[in-house]
Length: 563
Ligand code: ATP
Ligand code: MG
Image (cartoon, rainbow, N blue to C red; front, side, top):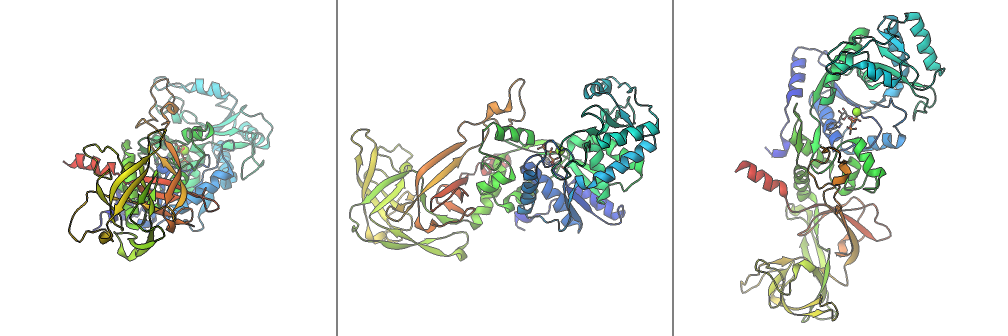
């Protein structure tokens, strides 16, 4: 079995198997992914998406995409559209089951009225601050609101007037009447509705009372016939409230199940923090390739397959942990290694003149597109007298471990010839080597010497007259600290932003075959890494993002783990 094809199993799948055995929901499995459209989705959401859609597919069930849009002040259409695009790009499909919690506002209202009628909810005139004071603490019980025992009739009247807009924002709330002495603070008469005089991106000005998450979420699940409501651990303490609302109204009751959220090293996975990075200009927008957003990593060149594979490998558990970003990069390399075209590109060019090669001669040499998949064929690369090689591949005074080009030394040019360095030309002022002169051995065409002599290095190169100039953007971790979200006292997480997370190289030289490459196309630049054409490429001017370098730090980490 290919190690990428393994079927995940975890405690959630165990619960579902058991429920199917006992026929708990008539043999149905129905999950949902319920993002709030107050920011772009990130790789943590991908974990939840893969889990919810994955579980549904595995058990022949369904998974809904639901926009949890109950807060008009933070939500926007831009986010809704980005979310839909991102979930689809990850490879998941919800058929016609795209839902909006805001479509249930009228139903939520009816549920609230029913709770009032049952004496289980009341209109409270305390301010937000007073409610907080009355709530008590983990060690002290709360204090009952003076409005707790309002008559049903009065509550119904006030709630309706809240809806029609008679009262000022923040002046009243509707609260569930549960238990101010409960050991679980979430059960101390939680707010169900608040007054917000703001326009909603879908319902406009139709409403000025908006339901709280805990109230809206359980009923959204119930209305949609969800069976397993999978969410992250921070909702564990909210489960009693989830159950309370549904039990009080005696409606379809899904099972809430919590799992540990994904934490990824060298980045932050919180929409609030990501918004901070965008708004304060630490990155160039939500889709900046350094961002852990789906939009950012897509632009960077990640494939949906590599992200899904990553999510399978990290698994699902009840305990929080920090996953090394090297594992995500490893999954990507594995995928791209199989399918990216190899090409030659010189990032920091140094001129190389082949003195004994005829000035007007051009040869078309055959290059392999992907040694992992010979079915991907070959292509022709032009060779001529003036070439570019990487500055790093030449040293005038080579240190001991340096086996690449140096005066008097012979190396191979990939797919071409052996060349031997004769001398260098330096800038008279700076002393910098600006040109390397060498001779080639015509008998080594294709890269091997008939006399069997060996060389210690093979360099990539491009023909100066044929290469195209391109811009390449090199990325490094966005944060220098492995766990920047774990803020030490008094230090803002932005203090850990890596000042060198982006390096732009403007005069790279890439092989001719890349002319006209479309945004989103991925390549391996031989010996350097995987790169992807950025949408900023315009009018023949190519811009590449380095998706990931070839150096696999995860393979190293894994080795130390297993030896
Ligand atoms: P954030 O903390 O980034 O603001 P959120 O939980 O507020 O995220 P939602 O839009 O409410 O964002 O999340 C939608 C779903 O994705 C929820 O079920 C949530 O539990 C899940 N989710 C959010 N972050 C992660 C994460 N890091 N790992 C796994 N699942 C996550
Ligand atoms: Mg949330």
